[in-house]
Length: 115
Image (tube, rainbow, N blue to C red):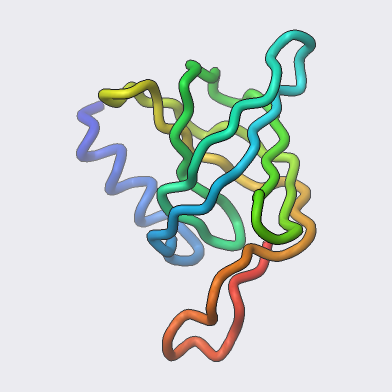
């Protein structure tokens, strides 16, 4: 399936829009030896995030994500992993989120972005 069609499918299946936002995060694999990677989000929602990574992840891998500002953390599932010029970009689905992203209230929403 062409990448454009997959993107449209993912976008149409979203329950809420992602907010373009760069937040420093730690990613920690659940398997021994994977270590911790410090990286950045590209966009976020209360249900998931798109994150840059230096390593290739497999679909359905589980990992821990923790925001460096604030107290957000979650067990997450890798929904996709795509190559990009400086590594990979991964789509994460938050399975067990706690805490909050440190962001201002989106204009017009009346609600803070929560995990």
